[in-house]
Length: 104
Image 1 (cartoon, one colour):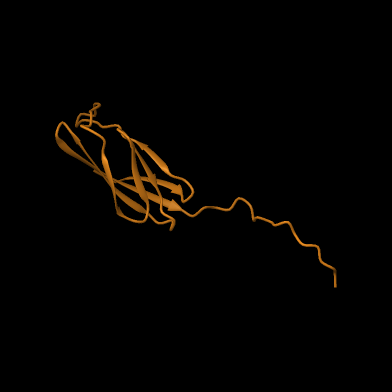
Image 2 (tube, rainbow, N blue to C red):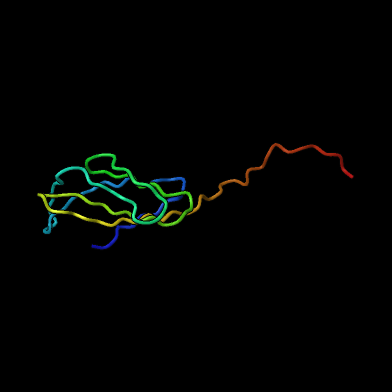
């Protein structure tokens, strides 16, 4: 199966809802919540519900690859996920209060 890819900035995160399907594309059930591990990169992952995981990028704005595993009818189900993080973009140059000075 191909890797499912997501993109966000380092100030965001991605909530992924799982929709298990059978070989014929029909809805299927998982035997319990999935497990998710980081296989490369500095992001983190958390299972937040029986069919939901939360992917958070690391601070370096690099890609993180995750391994998602579960059981369905006692058989293993595996998916790879990838999260590409971009640096946070400035929306203002952040001018300060300013200091009054004498002219030369």
